[in-house]
Length: 120
Image (cartoon, rainbow, N blue to C red; front, side, top):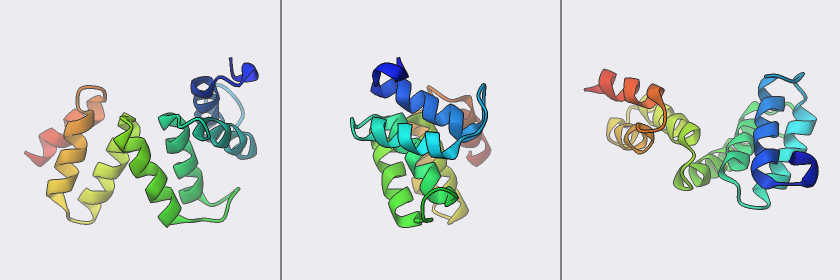
């Protein structure tokens, strides 16, 4: 489906290339596919693109742009982005915002449920 430029498939393949899961890590391919899916407003594509901006190996590291994309992915309902944002808020000591981020994704990610339990 990615060969047919189907945005969710592009985004999923971008994540696989970013992580080196099931395919050999290829950050340039991850960037190409994440950009293509993000252009169609796919939340997973936004998430992968944010990771690439935080990583800084194939694009200039840009934490401001990365955080903006991660926030957009979170608002669009991507649970990995919600978890990531919750972790950042927790690291920054903003437990109220962290708890809210974890609550948004608790039904979809067991990791979010576990973090909420630890914060209780």
